[in-house]
Amino acid sequence: MPTQIKMTLNQRRKYLKIMQVRYLTSDRKERMALLNEMQEVTGCHRKSLIRLMNGDLKRKPRVKQRGPTYGHEVDDAIRVIWETLDYICAERLTPTLPWMARHLADHDEMSAPPDLIEKLERISVPTVQRSIRRIHQDNPQLHRKPARLPNQVSRGIPMKVIPWNEREPGHLELDSVHHCGLTTSGEYVLTIQFLDVTTGWSERVAVLGRSYRVMEDAFRRVFARIPFPILELHPDNGSEFLNFQLVRFLKQTSPDLFLSRSRPRHSNDNRFVEQKNNTLVRHFLGHERFDTVAHTLAINRLYDKLWLYYNLFQPVMRLKDKTYLTDQNGASRVIRHFDTAMTPFDRLCATSAIPQDRRQQLERLQTQTNPRQLRNEIWKLVDYIVDLPKATPDQTEDIFLTLTQSPSSQKGVGTPVTLSFDRTTPVR
Image (cartoon, rainbow, N blue to C red; front, side, top):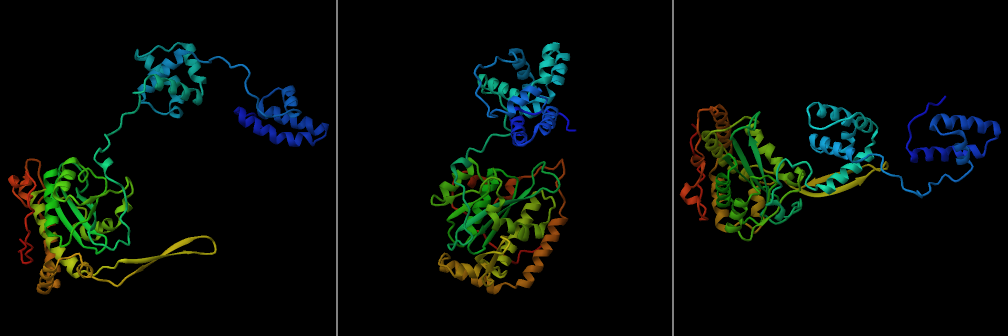
């Protein structure tokens, strides 16, 4: 036989509507059995069920509003307990109200007479929600404090995604790779990577820490070396990129530069540079921790060689078009078509973005370079970096030793230095 369960009024009416169809089409004996079943399930009086079965089950508006079941003492108790538990939701708050009231009363934080405990034991979640709503209306400042203030700089920077079929060089995705090892405590080396969506041209700079001083120096290094105009920078929402100092620096040095950002928690908005974070950074340096000036300088020497090896000798494929197919079962899939593999330098030369003198300079550098020897030098330098000692607690690192420019020339906005990329730099 069915057992009685606790139903809400709406649930009870839905159940009775289903039973009413059977009740009205049954004979006297079957109706008695149905009434027994409904009485057992709903807990309603038999005469009440007969009136409902023979009438309209639509709910009628209340003629007289009932008075409050719980007084102000319940609201006061909920206010104290809600604040104690850091303003959690009513669904989590309601079951713990009686116990927490007794517990706070033991610590002289509130009074908890037996009648109050009895009310807190039978109060429902919707009633607690209404009580919280009244408390919040009286005190709008009552809410959980955010873990951190929102980045005010990012609000003025538009969110977008650089199209995968962008045809004009100069639209660069930007990301950082942390070389912190197993812990993010203290200062450590970061790789700042730039990647052009159209040509695949990439730039990398290692910095020690995330201060504005080292970030500005990294941007100056890239601006001095990249062989075509930068039209757009597209970082994620990291504070190392979106801060007042760096945004002001970009506006002063490159007024025509368009600055956009990814959507929060959408790492695929920077999909091209995210892929190269693995193949051009993690593939060589792994997940080791690097946290000294010696690490930073050696990694930048590695990136100078990797800049030459990847941009001038490594062919890459670029997505040409997509075909969307749907089978008979409705499942869809995407077929991607790629063009012929070409080096980023060759792709850049196929456009008009690179000046003729820079093109000739890079062509001479490409002709003079032995890529097999360059690759061996890269992996020797990787072994050298991994074997360098880590920082010790009593060791102080001077970040100014990692900068391209002297501290005095960093105070104002000056002309970026011309960087020299000597492939024959010995590996110590």
